Image (cartoon, rainbow, N blue to C red):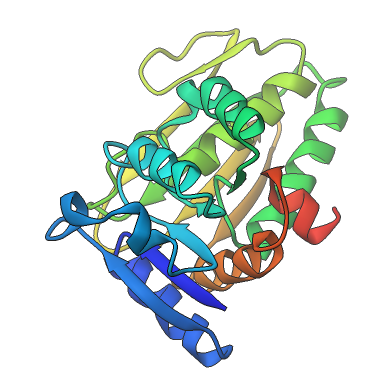
Length: 237
């Protein structure tokens, strides 16, 4: 499989290593030095694109791939306010978009655990719920896309919470503490607190390999498909 890497930072390099190890070929590497020079013809040399750039460039990259009829796997977060527009563009143009707030298998299992626990805790109103997410200092979006997914799962399943915030803790608000320090790949903690005890679940990434492997697997899956795809499609969970 021929892959175009849109974003060639630390994640891009990790994806490259795993893709090569799985027998794939990297035919295009795009970063800030050449992004404005890439054409549809360049993109069409690939079978699929994997996008890990920035919230400021992701929408442009998605559009370029749609125009080039190139399936795209998007790991960048911070653009979901535009999701409905992108979804409509994808469907009407017959394009392919595989997106995820997190490509790690462990995180996607954690999503399921979070949903299950939230459904249980909905009945126990003595417990308040909060969240903490910790990432490296280079991460631009706050909170992380993974934290937003977790928060929306909690809000959907717990009646006493109706929104989330990183700045305004309130009774009906799920407060997300966002921390940026060092080179932390990603840690997410959901905590239920009462006067008598705490219940806490956590996912802690040790490195970027889990994210990168999931992204390459997503590219393998999306290459010959159409429409909007997610990790639930890939993992059947």
